[in-house]
Image (tube, rainbow, N blue to C red):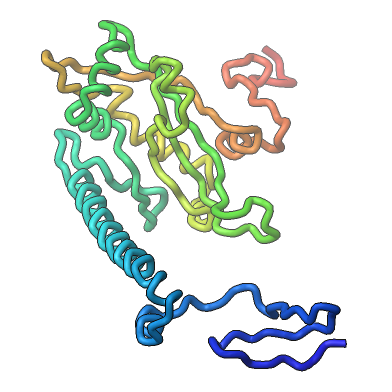
Amino acid sequence: MTEPAVQIPGNRKVERMASRDGAIVPAERGRKRPRLDSMVQKNTKSGLATAPAQLDEQELDEDRRRSEHFYRKNIAAEISSHANAETPYGKVPQEFAIGIDDRVECVDPCAWLYYMCLTSVAFRKLMQGIVRLGRPLRIVIYNGALIPGSPFRPDRGRVVETFYWCIADWPDHVLQRPFCWPEFAVIRKSLLAKVLGGLSAVAGFVLNRFTRLFTVGVRLPFQQSIIVCGVFAGWLADLVGHKELTCWKGHNGTRACLCCKNLKQHGRAP
């Protein structure tokens, strides 16, 4: 039989259980941390013994908060300086239109390549190793849907469409790391639903942002500046992504060649 709860000094609620040895079992596992001033004022042995540890812990907490605030300000300042840096192709973060009234932020590929070669020695050496005269760089664009949080949630959540790209001529140790793929844009699914044509129309707008790289090229700041051009090597996506990008009528649909004669004058005399 359980006796009613009693209050003992220290504001800790305990419950006396009927047992052979009359042990006292705590009703709650957690307890509040005793205040430092109360322990010192009581002038108990345990209070004096734990006071230095409590002081050290409080000082560490204050130092941790100060350091987090310091690093947070420095990171924000670095992000702002890189975002506002000017290149011959404009700033690295730019905007592009995906409809009549909607605009989305993106990372311009030409400005990104120039700025990375200008600020990173390792990336500049990487690009110098793959550039060959007369051979364009193969550009692959990746598309995939992303649900922040748990992907098994019952509702659709904040679904976003992500666009990344890479140069297929990069070495394998770069291509096999996802964080080495430059990000182009992240677009909310709710915004894509307003665009006529959906994801297939947005894919055309994305390719338009690479037009300069495919035609005119980008000047890389090597010791001897050279102009590098790219060529579109294809989309990288899952089955649903290819269906949405190419506007198939079904996931297993096949895209016929528009130059095939079977699609011309079908059922008519030659």
